[in-house]
Length: 102
Picture 1 (cartoon, one colour):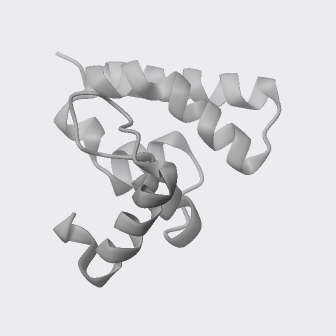
Picture 2 (spheres, helix red, strand yellow):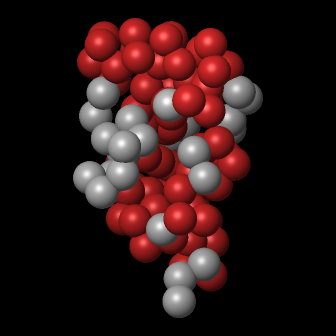
């Protein structure tokens, strides 16, 4: 949480308001951090969140693949994507995540 500096307090507030669910059970990253990335850091895609903001892709690509569907649906609801766009975004990120797996 220290990587957020003064904004960490805002993320903790988001967690207290119900966005405390982890994006993957093995890691501390929450939907509050995802929401923060969408609202304040101009994240637009699953890759933006998992690779560029949270950086989980570089820690555990398999875990990223496991949480991609749920995260894609969250982004789809946030951006009001249609089902086809959600599926495309999920599939695109899964292909990327598999390139990072050993």
